[in-house]
Structures are given as C-alpha cells and as structure tokens.
Amino acid sequence: MPTTRKYRTILLFGMPGSGKGTQGSVLGQLPGLIHISCGDVFRKIPKYGELGREIVTFTSQGLMVPDELTVRIWERHIQILEMQELLLPEQHTLVLDGLPRNYSQAVTLDRVLDVTQIFHLKINDNEEAKDRLRARALRENRLDDMNDGVIARRLQTYYEETYDTLKFYDSSLIYDVDASQSPLDVLRTIICRLSDMRHLVDATTKQKASVSAP
Image (cartoon, rainbow, N blue to C red; front, top):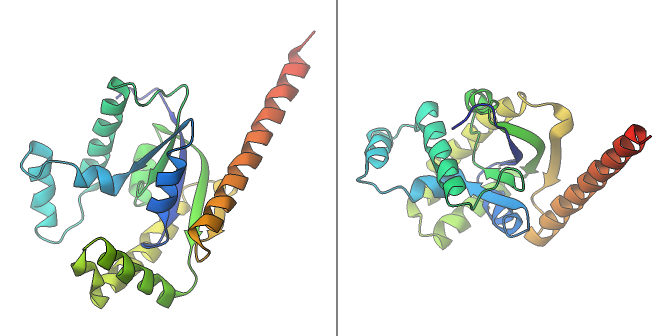
C-alpha cells in the first residue's frame, strides 16, 4: 500500500456492547462512507489459509493477534476494496470500528489515516454494559462471551487500551456520545455532528474561495 496516500477517516471508539458495530453498519449505508469492522474482517478470513493459520497460532493460546499482523490484514483488505473499486479514496471516507485497538496501532496507522472525527461511545454504568454484552452474546450465539470473567476482562481491556489510544489524537477530534441512549438517538447525535462538520467544511471552502478570488 502506498505510504504517501492518506485515507479520510472517522473512528468509532467505545467499550464492547456500546453499539459501535450497529452505528458503523448504518453509517456505512450513507453515500460517501465506507464502514470497516476489524472484527468482521478477521471473521471472514478462511481459517486454513495462510493468514488464518497465522491468526490461529495466537488465538488458540488465548493471545491477542499482534499489532503487525492486525495492520497487515487491514491493509490487505483495503487494497482489495480499492482493486474492486468499492473504495475510491478521493470520494469516500472510512468509518473504522475496532481499529486502531491500542496506542501502538494508532501510531502505525497514522501514516495512512487522515482522522477527521472520533466518536467515543460511552456507557457510564458498568452493569448496563455487562447486561448489553450478555444480551449480544446470546443473540449472536457467542456463549463463551456470557462468562462473567470474560466480560470483566473485556471491559478492563477497554479501560486500559482505549483511553490510552485516544491520547494519541488531538482532543478536538474526540466527540463523546452517550451510548446508553436508544440506538436511534445515538445515531441522531452522530448524524447531527457530521452535519455540523459538513457545514464547517463548506464554510471554510467558500471563505478560501472568496479570499483567493480577484
């Protein structure tokens, strides 16, 4: 992947069960937005292919997939989308869910991501977050995720890694969203923010044009 190109990007951050996937899927239906869920990309990789075997060497031991392999898989996915002309960098904005997962990935991906906005979906009530995770595990038949120990580890990882990752970015890019609202209200909050950004961009563009005009 060329290192000189930067992809215009919106990041979705939030604890497991906060609705990142739900919001990302809806946003991805809007013109000009391409939603990419890192989890979905991993799940679609054939288990017995070259990359699949690499992943299993870590997941089979209960280990996280290393950052280098994670970024490599994501970059390959982006290349495939471009070759299929499903992603046109000049026209599209990426909506990333689940990446970057930590500070190290944020540093690595900075060479290819032009982050214009970060939506931080927050749930302040831990018990509500746990209930959401249990409901999702049951709905998606991920029964291992219903284990209280697993849920506690997921939330702990969120607090340790996500907040640290956010420190990499300019605080002006981060927009907190109350994810305990209904999904529709969360979406409305995000859309209103994106609409305001569009107005700011339009206003700036017009101002520059008027200044440069003879």
